[in-house]
Image 1: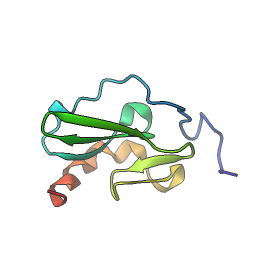
Image 2: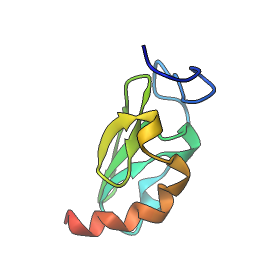
Image 3: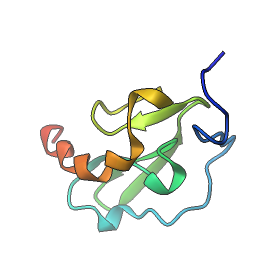
Length: 90
């Protein structure tokens, strides 16, 4: 079992939620945790293209390592401060 309270400690989306994330607002191409979806959603941005993905329940996207990790292994509130790590990818 996943530790914590589903929906409280971590998001439990079963499909991509509607959100306002827009790759055109990002300075760099790369991977972006969606803080409005509590980091269960991440986006890949390349030029004017955007692809959105959902991490499995109990996991969130780590902006530090660019993978889905257990919800307690990454602090989603720090994601936007790590967006510049995309510089290392391109």
